[in-house]
Amino acid sequence: MKKSWQARLASYPDLPSVKPIPEAMRKRRGEGTIATPSPQEVEAAMRSVPAGRLATVFRIGEGIAARHHATIGCTVTTAIFAHMVAHAVAQAHGTTAWWRTLKIGGELNPKYPGGIEAQMNRLEAEGHTVVQRGRRYFVEDFERKLV
Image (cartoon, rainbow, N blue to C red; front, side, top):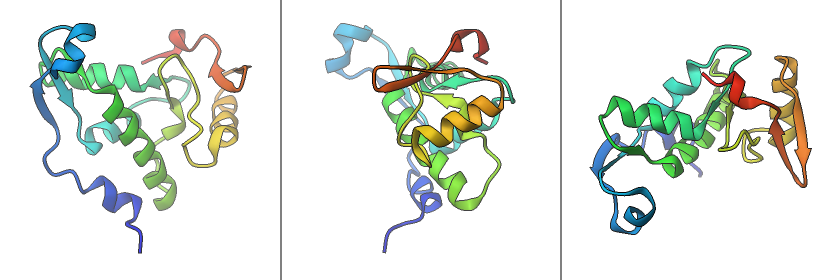
């Protein structure tokens, strides 16, 4: 039997963590430290986004890095946990507005519950304009609406 989304979120007892930036990333990101968030930190950040405003996984990662006094935040882990949080909230009928958290560049996340259509409907209901570019969907002028 598969674990529930809530159980998956609870299975990271060693996070958050701050470690030196891995050598493979240093060419692109430089020296310093990287903060890897806990799922609870990502959920708290997602929960704090008010109606009409937006967040990106990159911005959430930056905020977590700042709280841990790290140079950068791990956006890959942040994105994975945002996906897990969205499904956990949907499964438990929770109140965290997961649809307000976008991928880097303001892109909608097809892996969220209900796919692009569900996220787009919720965003448009809050007054955002979603545009299609090729096969991908973005919130227009998302930068002006970031928290």
